[in-house]
Amino acid sequence: MGLLFSKGLENVGFRERSDGDWDYFPRGIWGRGYRVTAVQRAELRQAMRPHYKAFFFIVVALVLVQAFIAPLAGKLAVGAVALLAIVPWNIVWRTRRRRILGDAPPTEGRLTLSDMQQTTAEHISEGHALLLLISGPSMALGAALAVFGGWLGGNRETLGFGLAGILLSGFNTWSGVRIWRRRQRFLAQGGHTAKAFD
Image 1: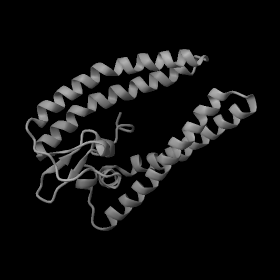
Image 2 (image 1 turned 180 degrees about the horizontal axis):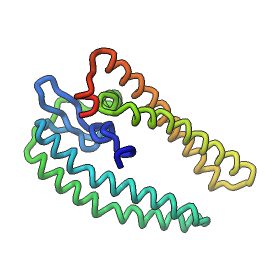
Image 3 (image 1 turned 90 degrees about the horizontal axis):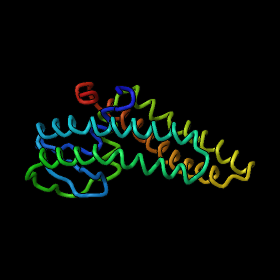
Image 4 (image 1 turned 135 degrees about the vertical axis):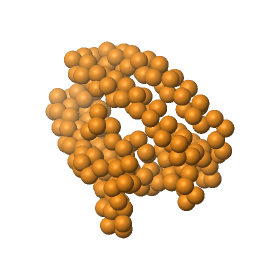
């Protein structure tokens, strides 16, 4: 999992404070945050790893199984089963998160997309950054081929999935470029491996 579970992802919900503590946003840019200590941050990062690993394996299994199911109803049924499989892991993660946060005070302000990208840039390794940089265009190519094939074959399902893939891969490409540039700027300004790969 070292290649796929990067420390950029692990740290993406955190924002460093000038006083040595951290702001933690469980729902990212969509919800409020909490002020946590360095010890709480370490515990949260450790607790989230099994959840993300389970999510990754379930999604991979979902993609592989759906590749052999043609009807849309079958694909939706498999997707529903995958969502149910994630629920236990999600409950365990939320319970551990509540215990670690305890009575942590709320943060000032919300997390922005720019904050998330900056944190990712400061903690992601060069290999992971390169993987992120090339994954978006690779996904876009696959999605474009799906659109082309769906258009030629008159398959609306394939065409729809391809168009959705183009939108998603476009966002991933944009994010990958921004994170790469921010990482290069961070290192050029004195960023060091102790922070970039802690």
